[in-house]
Length: 186
Ligand SMILES: [Zn+2]
Image (cartoon, rainbow, N blue to C red; front, side, top):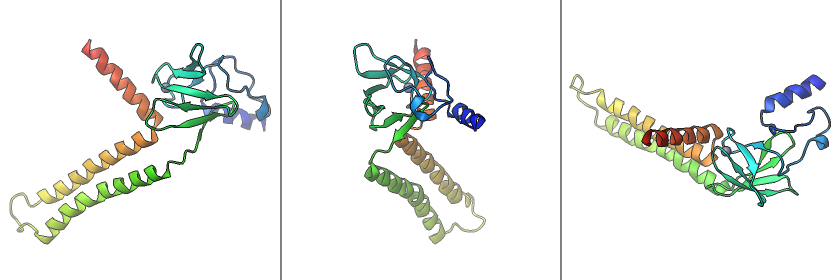
């Protein structure tokens, strides 16, 4: 039982980085969210978030996002993002609080599916309706063009989705790329 608990703890990977108590014990014994601790940033999962002096807010030292705090609900909310994500501190890790942004998510999935399916389907349809003469030069071109159109739109929609869901590894990668570009410019 105890080893299982420990394993769970190490699998989480999102513990506060200082003054951590023993992970063995009931949930209520876990340290609550406090301004004296630093935590792994829930947005980029790369930097540390730390309380801002004289403010009820945390800031990340890597992605620079600002979080307002609700100590009663043990939750933080990102303030400077296109998506108003909220996370609750369980004592061991951040758990995302489901936001009701169902409409936007639905629209993105619908538009995404249409963007991936329609353009290649149109190209394929015209190729199918007016097939090139057998043996003519470049008869393979419509097939290549259909594949390229599909691939390009697929990548576009993939990017739209990771932006929408604010995928942590994508956010971290984007910031690292941005910093690398800034360093090159100097
Ligand atoms: Zn961050």
